[in-house]
Length: 117
Image 1 (cartoon, rainbow, N blue to C red):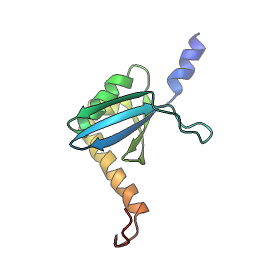
Image 2 (image 1 turned 135 degrees about the horizontal axis):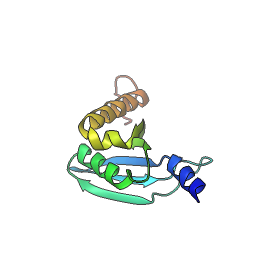
Image 3 (image 1 turned 135 degrees about the vertical axis):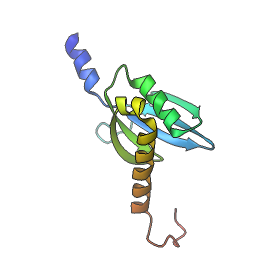
Image 4 (image 1 turned 120 degrees about the horizontal axis):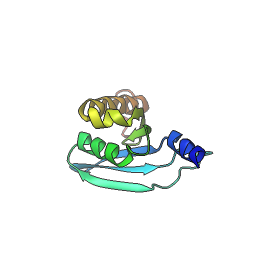
């Protein structure tokens, strides 16, 4: 039984963060397996700021996981230790937003006049 618990704790869930109007929300799913994206297993929303959302992610997942993969607004923005989300949510939020802007700029055409967005 201990072995199964150790394997479970090495999994890293994927947390999808999204701005929803004037608030933030997130969903959690298992890592991608063989190209199949599994459905979300948990959702929460209504957080006033991204740091508030990150604090809740840490609270919700911190007892079971040490690290998570993070996607923000559809972009993969890396992986983080849960303790970072709990102890420095403002700094993590800024870093995630910067990574999202970089990823967004990488997929948009230079000049932005193409009408695609």
